[in-house]
Length: 340
Ligand SMILES: Cc1cc2nc3c(=O)[nH]c(=O)nc-3n(C[C@H](O)[C@H](O)[C@H](O)COP(=O)(O)O)c2cc1C
Image (tube, rainbow, N blue to C red):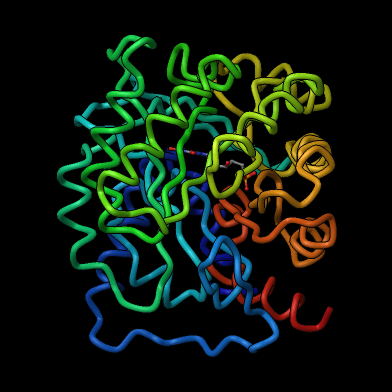
């Protein structure tokens, strides 16, 4: 058992957000070390996707390092890329606590963080000191108080600040914890949003920077196809699928009752795996290779990641499994992928 495995029973006795803050405090100390390890990844793990060269297909999904505070640590752990954010244009506190719950018996996380964000200005300033040799994506969202009709203004404001500091941008229209956000996935809302973002990209001379769209696992099959067509026609660079699910049906009884008792929020981790995979396969079928897809949702082993890549995903991201398994997960997945 590794150190994280040994400490896990203690860590999991802490309230999840306290544990998160403690881990980030510790992580910041680690990042201050002058000589962090530089993992050597086998050349076989390299991937090219949307014009970027990734040392590995495995990345850290958005939502863990919202403020880009631990980039040297993620690099030292061997992640091929890190998606920071979601960043909102203006700072906001997110939802009242408690808003983060873990269910270790099922490898499940419930969260209704609601985009707690330091705001784009602070995060952009921090990104100016990002470490070299790590691909960083910036995941953008809108502020809670911004009316849906003005969402584009928010994404553009955050883009102006964050895009010049990162390697790719992901538009998050799929968090379930900002009222109305998911309505932006509807084709008639998505079209002007994507067009407005691509106009801004051109205006800022960032034409070659990939622009991705992150989707929810709760979209109906017929809606998925329409969304894929809008995405392809728009000229964006790729899709990320999926975000967390609102569907409590992914959890079996008797745990479901416990989860429901915690209230609103999105579910992630092992119970999301089958649903996210199903949605991904539908998206990949509709895409017919026209855009690359980043797989996310319930991935927790080399087998899971390899399955997603075999399905046709270009890259894969993890979040929840890292909380349950700790930092050794990254090396374990890489070793498994190299063997396959
Ligand atoms: C606590 C928590 C916070 C998250 N915050 C964000 C976020 O800010 N933006 C985002 O796009 N996704 C966010 N996510 C979703 C993850 O990026 C990912 O899509 C989802 O958790 C499914 O992957 P997983 O099963 O490997 O965790 C969050 C997930 C969790 C558990």
